[in-house]
Amino acid sequence: GEDVEQSLFLSVREGDSSVINCTYTDSSSTYLYWYKQEPGAGLQLLTYIFSNMDMKQDQRLTVLLNKKDKHLSLRIADTQTGDSAIYFCAERMNYGGSQGNLIFGKGTKLSVKP
Amino acid sequence: DSGVTQTPKHLITATGQRVTLRCSPRSGDLSVYWYQQSLDQGLQFLIQYYNGEERAKGNILERFSAQQFPDLHSELNLSSLELGDSALYFCASSPGDGDTQYFGPGTRLTVL
Image (tube, rainbow over all chains, first blue to last red):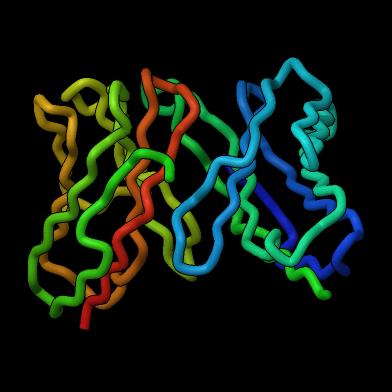
């Protein structure tokens, strides 16, 4: 079945780069997303990548997609304490006639130490 | 701020009761999605409406139902509540069917 896997925790020092990894199962996924959730808050869309792309850069964020291995990563350059949050990887599935339901990973909790 | 609003922010109720959660999508968005976030199950898709019609169902219990009204706001009804229904319920919206989804702040439901 559909499954998205992420490591649960990542700890980095302020100023370092963070790399959050994700693997997904459905090769027919068209879009892959990264969302950020701060404590007590909703899900904030960070970035997304279309499945025919290998890389997308958006300011401090770089998304890499390896379709062969079904592996997605999010790199945050110059990580700041404000980046501390839970990061969710999600794949868009064609499901039951709909074009766009999301299957989420369990989330990676990023802790940034000063 | 995503532009998606949800009310109430918090809800505390007892087992066996019924509650209604409300969602207003971003202006112009036709699709509304409901998700449940719990510690053990993570984020799970419940149901999607597109322009008033049910579009897809996920892991939604029979005790739960939803609808989307002509003004495009949506309500999620949860009945015969159990302790295990305690969770964060998120609504998301997108312009069409399958576009990028923008999430609301969620409703935290506590069933005592």
